[in-house]
Image 1 (spheres, rainbow, N blue to C red):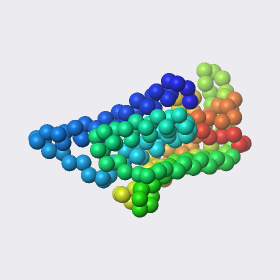
Image 2 (cartoon, rainbow, N blue to C red):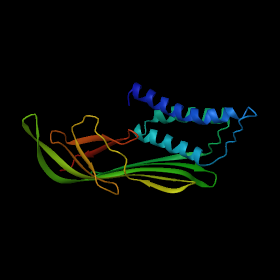
Image 3 (spheres, rainbow, N blue to C red):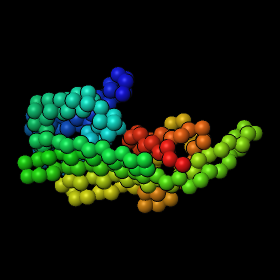
Image 4 (cartoon, rainbow, N blue to C red):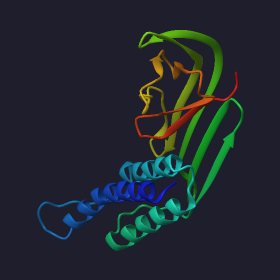
Length: 205
């Protein structure tokens, strides 16, 4: 990841932390009265942090910087974001990819974020573009996020996959399944989800 990308990631996590910092600052005044407890808000902050790390492809510099900023704010403003350590996992096969981030507390797993997708080649078709017949590769894609925390387990399917290059045909079916077509001059193709996490498919045909 380039320097600009790292700065954007850092800006994103600082913005998220600012919400909790603002709440913490309100406690200094008698009215309104705000009490921050260790609950879903803090756990959700770790979900966002995990998504940023996954978006960076587990860039170590990004992880170190954002984690340092979070711990600094946590200590300075008593945000009550409590975890002792974390573990990272990235499994990549020829037809699937899986990122997992786990934040551990004293009593075990506190928050876990899993981003998983797989793809299956379904053939090809031709699409007329500007008077020319262009060959497209056709794939079925399964994509999901799983968030485990104090709320239980949440599975998210419709993550609004989109194409930054605006060349792909993308159709959402249901239950995490998509149909994706992209020009055959690409051996693989990168989409992004609603959190701008890159989702690369293809390479096997």
